[in-house]
Image 1: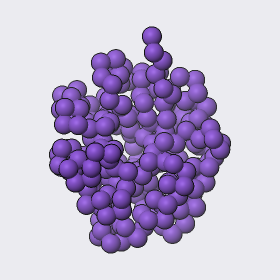
Image 2: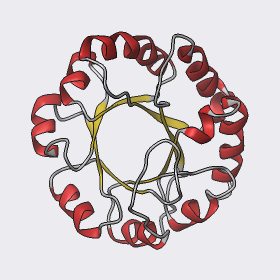
Image 3: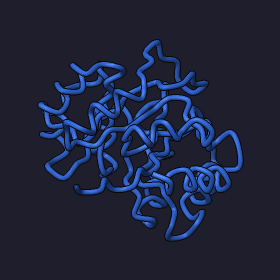
Image 4: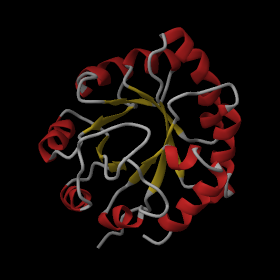
Length: 212
């Protein structure tokens, strides 16, 4: 039986990005050196125009490129295309993965929020999504969600489908183990990292992920 690859971290930016955030992102990505578990970073900002978003994103994109971490833009296919990002993450109201693929090309990574719905996840897979995201598994101070899947959702998906699944929502080093054991390919984390010492929290997650 083929062993699944280790679960990895998918960092999501905090709700507000200031001028000092680039240094914090770099600090998170260099923690543990070659053993750093961060595979992707999602740029998620709200209520600012595309020009300002691009200005904030460009230094973060450069940091991710230097560390070979995928840079994913939340919601906006247009911004992802403008930046030459590695991909886009779509909510259920943010467009069709097929149209995003046409805009961004075959190599783009396209993820889709599927909440706690098996049906939405299967639809996303059929539409060509590169990964599906389930959550929120726990209460989150970053983004409110009325959807609350159980870890069994990850187990079901990983047993049937080859498309990677992402667990999201209030995940910390203290509560992550059941999600890792259930088969999550990625843990999407935000507040647990940026509300503390980012390097220490990434190291704590790395210890959890090694136990898969």
